[in-house]
Length: 532
Image: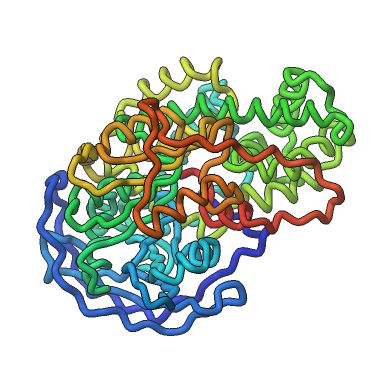
């Protein structure tokens, strides 16, 4: 989970309110979660304090204590950090919880973004609530298993020799071991089901009988799991860029590899279309070959002593999430390929791929949740075979992604079972999906649409971004506003989609090196981060 793109759009940073200390003592690890846990106990209402920023002047913050183990509500407590933009209209529709995904993403600033991006008359009817899920950000304890795990220069992600493979395996095992040593008492409770129970604790603390929820990316899975556990408490549910519920999580990452390769090739084709700006040729395959030649060169001689082959992949992966980054990434590519100028490439790495403290925390929670949620192969031979089988079809991301998830082969806790999110007990649910989404491929959204019986699916035809509402597409946002106003959802004629919106056009090359990406889409995608 990396949020370096905030450098380009000036996304606000929140200072949360006072954090309550966590009592000593920890509960013992437990088996996989029951499908229908007990209801969350009522909690004291949060004490809201001002934490305004220049962009979000009405933002408030608070903390909430919840049980580490919801089966032991009087046992050890942990703290969740909350944010709020309070409603201002006489018509009040309750709390709207927002989540940016990950797992591992902070949702504190997202509350301000959503409240300011929705039509004012709609936002005024809700308390828009952001939160840092357990283990994340300003919640306590906040996980940071192995600071500096992604510091450059890492071994080449492509394990074309036994030594390179062993170096990468050693890194993955070291990370898993460090998590186990630092957080043995916490890791058994860092998972999606416990996060969903926290969501219900937030609902109870806010004094609301029912909850409105708006999740992006992994946040869609969290929302679907919450809805499965507490269907009677769901009032409205918005899922944007939907996790496929049938392949949590090992298979999901293999599916991502193929989709990200397609998206990277679309980026290469875009560069070829703009040869006048980048001078890399008009043939997409030739442009792609130049990119892999750059990768091979950096594997031998990292740019600025920082950007090796693995760091290059980290830098260009965000382009698979959001095409607003393409002009910046293309500039860096062209400068290196045409002029052997490494400066723009190092700058791009610092903006999009370099680790920071929030990234270390986000990755720690990402691995904790994914490794705990579902079973992963414990035999590295299966990872190796699956990755090499896929590599000819998806060379851009397959090995980088394999190493990113590889700690799950050595994870110190047992794994649960994915939640069957099939649900016929909900009010209408509104879902959004782009046909070319790489992080949560289109087929997963269609599958979730089928499993959530009364859901409506709005498709962005030809879109390739991940996180598509409140990002500049008025057609999508009109459906969102109508649903949040009075529950209206589109109903189609029997196909996969209930409504179709055309995608926004791809970006243009930068007119100047000082061009800004301070659009609503760039702000959103900085908040959503990468890898989830």
